[in-house]
Length: 204
Ligand SMILES: C[S@@+](CC[C@H](N)C(=O)[O-])C[C@H]1O[C@@H](n2cnc3c(N)ncnc32)[C@H](O)[C@@H]1O
Image 1 (cartoon, rainbow, N blue to C red):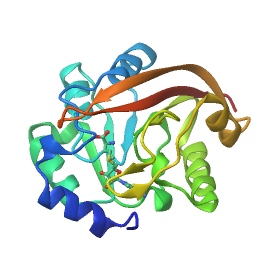
Image 2: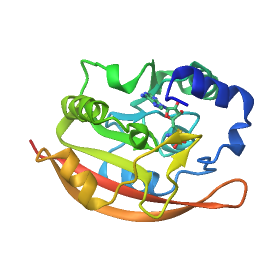
Image 3: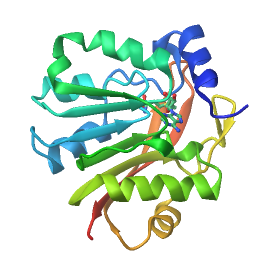
């Protein structure tokens, strides 16, 4: 199995969105931290958004400048349709985050369970370069990955588990850790998965 648009389109076309293992009925830690560290007009991007409820939650809280980036056309079409009444507040990007380029810099870059699929060191470096270019100085990187006590696979794909030491070293000196925490996510099938959440601030 490889991390391709076809792989993800198959999942979104063949599984109920409420049954995928990473499904949340409400964003939890991401929403709390975004509300705490940003303002409602700040530009926020959710990379690998899938059909996540985060954008809906942020719109409900008054956020007006959201960008959603996703590899799977199927997932992006679903979320676009769901948010059609808020089109003026959301910019959609159908692309691979590794190829993403924008003239905008963001106040916060959110990634829940996307970066951890990058098992190749070259791809990790490319992602971090994009992230560094696209986040404003003083802006934030909010990352959620499986933790060392969590699964080693997701959707039959290998993932990389992260703890504070590993992600801090990988990100390098441009980002400072502001906070981190763990979450045991309850899957729709009743099993659980351990996630780590990290909030970094771009300092130069
Ligand atoms: C485990 S799901 C998480 C979805 C969402 N972040 C959430 O928390 O509900 C991973 C998502 O990342 C997307 N994805 C994987 N690799 C990607 C890439 N290189 N660029 C953009 N999206 C990607 C997949 O299509 C999928 O929707």
